[in-house]
Length: 195
Image (cartoon, rainbow, N blue to C red; front, side):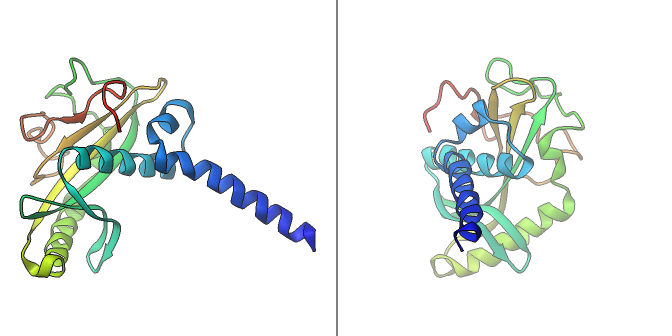
């Protein structure tokens, strides 16, 4: 009977040891581990939540399911409910220079390009649906923010880029890809920010 429990126990221990750093020290997991796509997404969500919380946002929920789809992060601030979509991916050419992403950098492999019109509209509908249910319906909903986690494919550098108030997908226009005051990098260098 112990033969059946030993493999299950080992698998559970392996899962806890693997998922713990993704939750509590995602920057270390990004730097020292080779992550699968699912693990990279979870690390991106955790880093995004920490960075936005430090910027003054309040987290209402993570991976919330609505009739319109799943929302990665639901946050509130200044009387608004914001649905945050996190896209993480590896990039071949590191775009971050002088703590900014160049305005003309929009390659096919950019993680934010995976957010298309269908996903953007579903996030807006989910935001309206959630706004009616949180805080007694006093919040304004429908705002969608995109946070990209850019991970250097052969190195240990990573950066979070926050695109506030996404109205169109990154693949449609280049206006969302240029960081302005409202669209500045959330954390351009992992060594300079504390999580």
